[in-house]
Every structure is written in C-alpha cells, then in structure tokens.
Length: 438
Ligand SMILES: *[C@@H]1O[C@H](CO)[C@@H](O)[C@H](O)[C@H]1NC(C)=O
Ligand SMILES: *[C@@H]1O[C@H](CO)[C@@H](O)[C@H](O)[C@H]1NC(C)=O
Image (cartoon, rainbow, N blue to C red; front, side, top):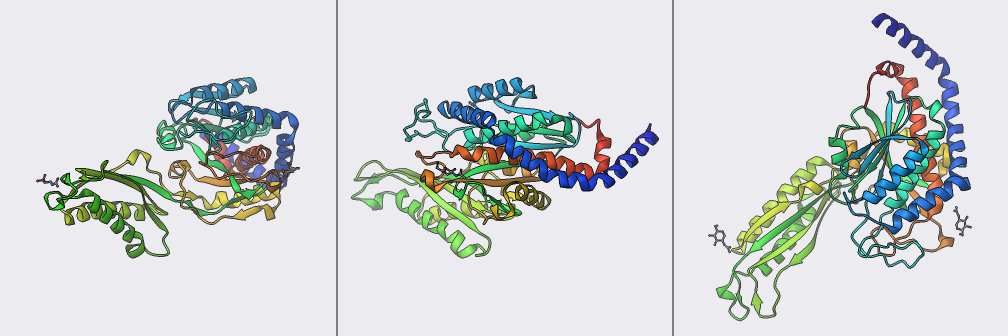
C-alpha cells in the first residue's frame, strides 16, 4: 500500500512538473474569466440584492442570526455544503474536491452599534445599528466568489473553505472560529476590506506588518471626595487622572523607538457631576497600538506602571483592567502569499492597479488567523469621484460603492483557485494526504 502510494506520488510529481507551464499560463485566464462572470448582470445584481438585505437588517457580534440564515439559504441554493453553527452564528462552507489542500476565504458579518444617517431606500431598519464598516459588502462578495467557484468546482485542485465570521468589531469572532479547530489543515487564508480612499479597480496591500495590534485599558483612580472649597480635606482624583494622562503620553514620545510606530490614546475620562464637589473617583480608558507582540507586551506593562505610579504620586489608588478578550495581534501578511497576490491581482486588474500600501495603525481580527495559518489581507478600492464622496468606515454617513463587488468576488475566487494549483504543482505530495480532513 505504501509502495503504491509512493509510485502514485512519483507519477503525480512528474505529471505536475510537465504540466506546470500550462497550469501557470492558465491561471491568468482563470482570473479574467472569473471577472467576466462576476460582472455579469445575473451575479452582480444578486450580490447587490444580498448586500442590501443585510444592510437593512444589521446585527451586532454573535447576534447575526438573520444574516447567518440568509447566507445559509444562499449556500443551500447553490448546493454548497457547510457546517453551522461555528462560533455561535458563524458558517464554514466547502467547495471543491473535499480533500486537501484546503485554502480559506473569510468575510466578517457583524454591524456597529450606531445610527445610520444616510437617507436611502435600503437604510438600516434597526434603530441604533448600522453596517458602517462594509461587512454587508464583504459577505455579498464572499457569496459571489462562492458562486463562481461552485460553477468551477470540477476543476478545483483541492477544497476552498468559506469562513463567514461573527463579531469582528470586538468580541473575538476570529479566535472563536480558530478555537473550534475547524481550520486545522488550512494552508492559506485570504481576507479583504473595502476602502473609500482607494479608487475602484485598484487594490493595495503589502508583505509583512500591515495593521497594528490593538489593546484596550480602563483604570479607576480612587481618591477622597469633598467640598471644592476645601481641597486640602480631599484627595482629588481629577487632578491625579489628568497627570496620569499626561504621563501616558510620554510613553510613546520618550520611551518608544521612533522607528517602531506606537499609539497610546486616552479616549475616555469620566468623573464628577457637580461644580463644587470633588468626586471620590475617576474612570479613564483608551487604546494602545503597536506593530509587534513584544512591543505590545512592553507597552501594556508600562501603561499599568505609569497609571499606578502616577496615581500614588497624587495620594490616589488605581486599578487597571485590560480588556484582554478584545485584544488583537498585528496583521502580518505572509511573504509568499504577497507574491501570489501580486501575480493574481496583476492578471486581473493590471499590475499598475496593484498598489503598495503603507502600514496603518488600525487593526483587524483577521490577524488572529494569521498567527496560526499563513494569511493575506488586502484593501479593495471603491472610490469613484464621479459618484461623489464616500465617507470613511464607522461614519454614520458611510456608504458602499457596490460597483466594486465584481472585483472583490473575482479576486477572492481567483486567489484561492490559483493558490490550490500552486500548492499542487509545488508540493505534489500534498495530494498524498488525501485522507486529511477538516
Ligand atoms: C489606598 O489603598 C490603601 C490600602 O488599601 C488604603 O489604606 C488607602 O486609604 C487608599 N487610599 C485612597 C485614596 O483610596
Ligand atoms: C464611476 O461612476 C460613473 C457614474 O456613475 C460611472 O459611469 C462609471 O462607470 C464609474 N466607474 C467605475 C470604474 O465603476
């Protein structure tokens, strides 16, 4: 049996060496064909209608029940098998041979707790909730990619795994999916985000660190309340908190390597309710960001030391709480996948439309997958000035230019289909692991 498999592996290896030329010249044809399909009115209008339905009914992290139901109904119609529930509302679908290698695509499903201020036919029907970060579009494009891939399932050299993830905007959706073990044998994972700044028809990304690690902290500064007219009978937590905030700003300006970008922002300051009363305590909170795990751990430790030390200087006590479940590692793109992305996106859009991106201090929980699986995250342009200005994500006026959907759907489909080809031609023995299952 072992011997037979060796002969088989040898045959496949030689075959793939001889076939490698046609396979590679094929993959540019694949991309173009996929883009034509994605642009066809049938697929385009369908993606738009899905996105608008999701937009009308935004759901927050781990509450994406209707969104999840809609996705499953579409997967059922296409005959795509899936597992549900994964991470409460998440869905993981499978297209192709059902065998290794496995390559994954991820879309996030959750909305934000904010009121939509755009007046249009498909405005959010739920007060105080809105898809203001494009996740409705990300889902529509992943379904678009799924439809293209399902039409080509016979020619896929392995299995494409569709990850519909809950709770990207805090809540640790990616960790929950990963912890379920469902992505154990996945060899690569791709994700995208729409951008209001990048022109439509363009994409951008980079190899290595792309987005920052993000952590949150909250501290209670306790003093002793009293009358504003007799401060010497009180211990003033307002002044202590003010000094703490100033000291925290020295962490980046005086302690950080200027070439290792970091941010500390205090975004919350709550204390006191009267003009003439010194309160008992103050609550402050904020976010800190870095591009490496080591710097992150160091900054976290210094934030705690500065808060407690500076509170003591002012005779106050402080407790610091880090909201670890919402921590997010840096988004670091795999170098080999970057080359693959440049080839595929170059074929699909023209190489002049594949831009190098500067790292951003924003963060994204896609990074959690990248700690376990080689991953690649990129930005999809949707700016079209003749259509007007598209405000940035998390604005109550945020809008999506749906014209970008065919590019996103075709790219996601091409990236994975051609990556399966690449894995098979470089590592024909992978085929030998046919018993490997997710
Ligand atoms: C700080 O904590 C110490 C020890 O628990 C306590 O004795 C002191 O009264 C506290 N000070 C304030 C301002 O809360
Ligand atoms: C930009 O918007 C205009 C006006 O709607 C449209 O005619 C044009 O095709 C759009 N361009 C792209 C690349 O989508």
